[in-house]
Image 1 (cartoon, protein in one colour):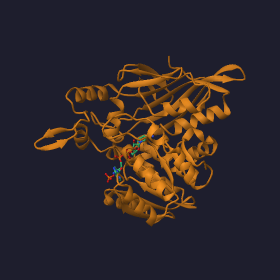
Image 2 (cartoon, protein in one colour):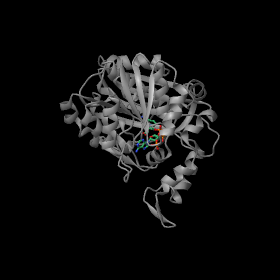
Image 3 (cartoon, protein in one colour):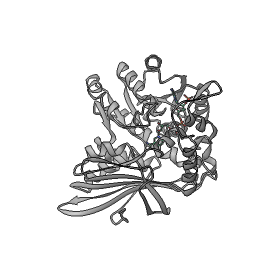
Image 4 (cartoon, protein in one colour):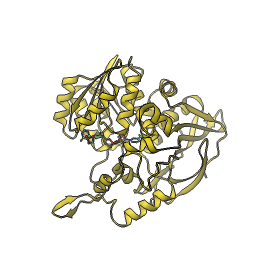
Length: 399
Ligand code: NDP
């Protein structure tokens, strides 16, 4: 049915590529491209021989001209951006210049400020609309499936949704004292930033990890979780009718937090360049280089993730509560695609988002967040491609 150019060959890209190959009726041809072509070639070698035709290329996605040349040569129907948030705008520029649809899993973040928000990407709306192409923003799990869950709850369960709590629990154990389960630089920038949530249309800021709750997650058990800033709060507060408050919580173990505090205290998480023996280095980038590669955690990680949304709102004038979530097992993911559950829960929705555009099930020129589309075909595909969802009408609530 179509061709996808996948930029990035890391943990998330690897899962997405496996899933494109499982969905070969839709993904007839893919090209995997990143700065290090050998990583792309290694993925091709693993998956070659199926129905999906795979090629690879070298590209620096910070360079718009290189991207345009690659797109013109491969002629994809969609570009799936699974590089880093820093590359979002250059890839969107290249998609605009070549009139190709765009999908990503994380919003743009400037390299020199750990601040992520949608304004930079939303600024492309009119240009994408005029070019007749669609940018689907945030097609991972969170953001991604959390937005699809919200659109589904709005469509089928509520007249208005007043409160959303997004709960992201990773109860996996990789056996290292400290490691991050996706790109360490992005992960540490995210969790060491101030927390925030939206109440009555306003952002309320908290100190990092200031708000802690304990939650008993279905199939996982009781875990400590902390309120974080997260990008989908911004779009969901605009796109879901009736929102009074929306919060995001993520679980962290004590060992992770103690290590992080220590690294912060000694300056290792800083993104300010420093002089080291005549070179400029960024402490956080150096830390990334000495930490375990997230892709290497797959064979070691045991346990489950549980990510979902608790909705409180009204249906036919009555208050109602609804919880939608997915439970994913690290070891089962590894058995299936050779990656742990955090890459899995992001790579599967990235493939599904691109499939929605390729099949024309979703077609809305402009720049859109995922909750702006019909959730039903995406919810079906989650069940089909390894992320089945569960629902509960009587969940424990978060105070
Ligand atoms: P990795 O670090 O494992 O992979 C990143 C890949 O991007 C590498 O293959 C790297 O290859 C490539 N890359 C980096 N810079 C460039 C560049 N300038 N040009 C071309 N390729 C580049 O990260 P993950 O796979 O863990 O994460 C990928 C994305 O998924 C991130 O944006 C992350 O924020 C997002 N994510 C989203 C989640 C969600 O639920 N929405 C959850 C987890 C992650 P090379 O260095 O060879 O170029």
